[in-house]
Length: 114
Ligand code: 5GP
Ligand code: ZN
Image 1: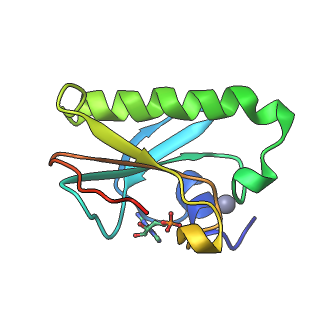
Image 2: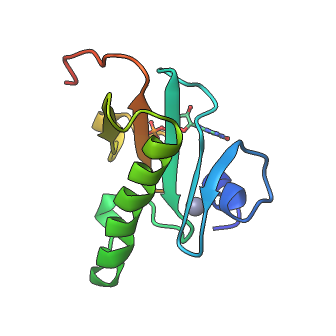
């Protein structure tokens, strides 16, 4: 997906505050943070949303959680806690159609989510 901004970030063709990258995933700070720590974890491969996930992606999705935990450790919010959010589709407010985990922390999160 050449036009996708998150694909560009993963390929380092667009600037981002990168926190972690490996062969499968990339973590970078959200450009409009809503919490003191607001990081996005994405698969390097373009998957538009959960709706486009295939069986072969099962391991990759698990890996995203491990990267999220690693980032939380790096950011010092592992013990205080953090929230993971995946917006999927229009009603959930998904804006960027490249699957991503929001990692939010550094303050007590508010409810409700819905
Ligand atoms: P969504 O609503 O799709 O789950 O969230 C997309 C998130 O991506 C938003 O929080 C938005 O601030 C962030 N975002 C959109 N474009 C960029 C960008 O070019 N760079 C970075 N770092 N974050 C972005
Ligand atoms: Zn993409």
